[in-house]
Image 1: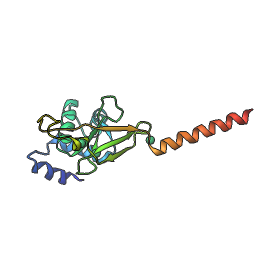
Image 2: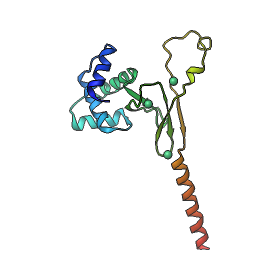
Image 3: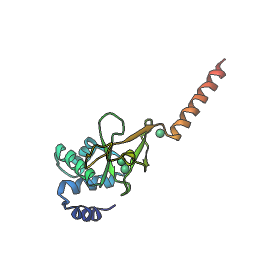
Image 4: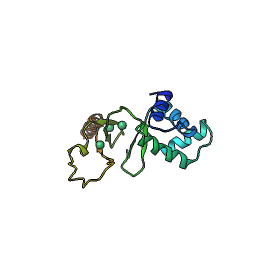
Amino acid sequence: MNLSSVKRDLARKGYKMTRPRRILMEALMENSGWVTAKELHEKISLHQGHVDFSTVCRNLDALTGLEVLCRVDRENNGIFAYCLREMKEHHHHLICRSCGKTSLIYTCPLDGLSSESTEGFSELECRFEVYGICKDCKSNTAAKKNDFCQTEQGRK
Ligand SMILES: [Zn+2]
Ligand SMILES: [Zn+2]
Ligand SMILES: [Zn+2]
């Protein structure tokens, strides 16, 4: 993903690459990970100049709606984090509660719903995140437990 491809993408959908959007995209491209609106706003204020916090929030959500960014409630606390969208296809995220590692899920709960069960609602939008403990964190805690048992036994 680069700025000019995003610009083309936005133009195709009838949107402009405004100054705040360009600044946001530049900051996100440098970052290559998940950031909250607050973190991004701080970074922009340090390096790129003044953009209102509300402008940052509004444009992050707009870019998410335009499928340029992904938005996830990573810590399950109502605070969203954003990153450049990893792939065009519709997807959801699997998030490690311990280290924050995020993987993609390609199935969508909406796929299983009939139009009857959604009562004729249109423009459906799904928010679906799965939280768990990743393999690495699981084996790390297992390893720590073993260390602990050994030292305990060693003391006896
Ligand atoms: Zn994503
Ligand atoms: Zn983990
Ligand atoms: Zn979905």
